[in-house]
View 1 (spheres, rainbow, N blue to C red):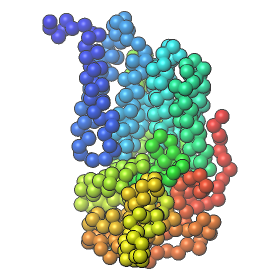
View 2 (cartoon, rainbow, N blue to C red; view 1 turned 180 degrees about the vertical axis):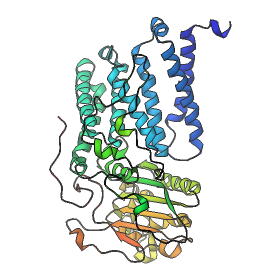
View 3 (cartoon, rainbow, N blue to C red; view 1 turned 120 degrees about the horizontal axis):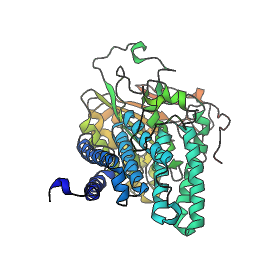
View 4 (cartoon, rainbow, N blue to C red; view 1 turned 135 degrees about the vertical axis):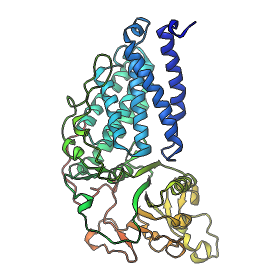
Length: 465
């Protein structure tokens, strides 16, 4: 049979099968390793571009052959998911805006609405889509859209519980509680200036004071991780890492600042009947500024093991350009020698583990020292320029740590939050020898919630009803 005689529907389903296989390969890839995954992304994106174009050109024939609207929405949702995944791997804001475009198209076109409450799997598909769109809007600082999505998600979960077995949607009830708690913890903070570097509020780098250095270094990569037993989070993004992710990005056009309080409905893309997306979102069209360096690539690790954390750090140090600086952000509670099973009776603290007396727990305390990361664990990586930001009650362990005496040829900078609870930030002192303190941790965990800039909390903004 010649290619021209192959039915349109058969060609379409062949493309769908091919796209599904390639998508499954890239979906669970980690958000690090700079070069390896770019090839995977472009291959799977090429297939989905071909699939999307094919269904646009043959929409009527495919509908007559039995194509459902939710299947079209599923393709668009997958493309949005691909874009967001690539943003997380590269920190390129253009991918983030493209992800928003496709997700908003799915929502405004109501691709999953038909037969939603007659099909259990379709209901779950719609819920997963809304949760992913929520994440994109959070990172994009489109708070008004976030609140609207949360309300829609709550109503959808309630309706699904009434229509189907309630036990099947218990996890989604927890998801709603999680995002409501997240927004409540971050509400006071969002009323202040945006965390991203903004030319609306900040000087252009060209106008900053010049500092004479022997070599020009640039912030290239970052590792962000936090662990507290009951920390505020949404999905696998904790409040700590969410704020740090924004702190490490450029926002040259001022778009996040200008749009953070404006409703998004009516500002999005114009999606044609064929499914093609129209003009870009107004507040994102100027997000790229060629005069500024690219955003540093970030690996956001959710509750990694110590070995996984070290493996990721080794990979990023290996891929770090010659002029690159790696930021390591750790937010966790401290651990002392008394918590360690390696402490032998009859030995003094100095005799048992030497400088391993203090560290940070990035896992459950029941595992003892297995989930404790210590300053000496970083010694092999000090061959590269490092910037440590340690948000912990034991961050002083990184001040008087073996890295200062055993580092391998590079100067490192360490910022630590060591102010006891309730102490005036003005009483903090600056560390000597290139080590500093910032007054208060960035995050708001239960029992330690605060505004991340050290200022008194503002009145709560609009809540989630």
